[in-house]
Image (cartoon, rainbow, N blue to C red; front, side, top):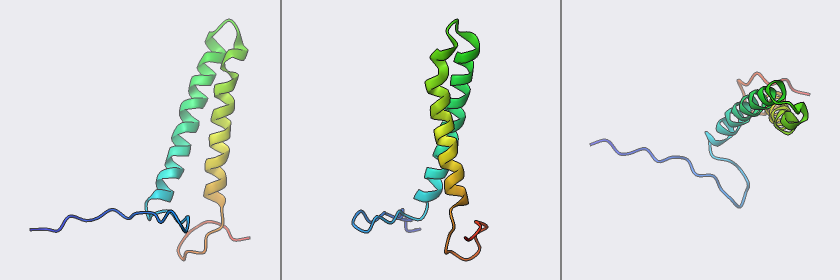
Length: 85
C-alpha cells in the first residue's frame, strides 16, 4: 500500500513557513481583495449613504496592496520571476 504523504509543517520557532503555506497566503490576499472590493463597491453603488461601503473598499485596497507587495518581493530562490533590487 502507498504511504500517505505528510504535509510540510512550519517551524514556529524559526518563523519559516511550510512549503505551500506562502503560496496559500498570497492567494488568500488576492481572494480577500476581490471579495472586500466587490462587496464595498456594491454597497457604495446601491445604498442611499455611499460612505457606508467605504470600509469594505478600504479593506479591498489593503489586501490588494498586500498581494502585490508579496508578488514583487525579491526572492533568493532560483527560477523565480520576482525582480531583484
